[in-house]
Image 1 (cartoon, rainbow, N blue to C red):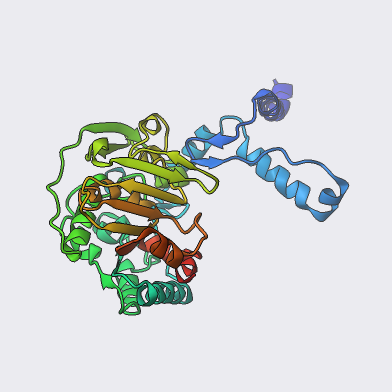
Image 2 (spheres, rainbow, N blue to C red; image 1 turned 180 degrees about the horizontal axis):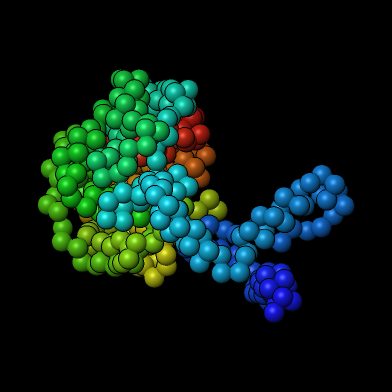
Length: 372
């Protein structure tokens, strides 16, 4: 009995360690985590140089952490334990009412805001065509009343006012007011940082009105798929029951053609990549995610040609625009590095829209390509 009391704890600890050692040894490595929506670290290559520099041990630690047996389960358990301990913020994600998960908007770097605003202003001055500009607030701003007050979040409304005051040459679209007027509706996902197709509709309506267009009526969803867990869920490890629902509202036929340039060649594309509705990151159903350049044929052959410089928020807004334009040229400056002014001239663009979420605009380092 004394022997058991003395050695049982040590024996259990050794058995525990041996179990996980064996489990990690026989479990195949994964390249990608669907739950966290990111690539996982691979086993580092051993060299004496990397060992003595410390790179090997650091990389090996990342590898073990990413490839740990049943990692997704342990990440989820950690998050749930933190909730039980009374935490309302996990890994930068605020936990709000009814399973709402929203990434905090940190205090922005004013020098970055200044630089990006300057790039948009220079573009608006030199484009030779009307330039429209909008910053799209996230759920942390519009749904702040549903979130815990940590006192550490920045004000997206203040950031919008600061930037727009430095872009006098562009026509500003007040998407903040448009979304605030519908704050009681499901205009954002509960587990992802993007707006829903309903939120995008209100953003589209504000843009259309600013451009002198008559917004179309809100289409009824023709496809709805639940079980979407987005970036906020991936970041904190929580997955509210049921997840979000992705709704598709504008039919594929709204586009007469979709052509995608991936940086190497042109390929046929679609407004919706329906196969993406079966993966975790269902938001990539819109335009198959982010590409350097996409050209969409609209359903109005007499309409203008529009250049849309955007981040991923615009992906689900674009289908609404198809009925107003003959062509929509969609550029993502994170991947498209060629001259925008030359593109406008070469393709006979009539108007341009610069559309970014506040969070991306506050951190993006590629907007200077607008001035090239």
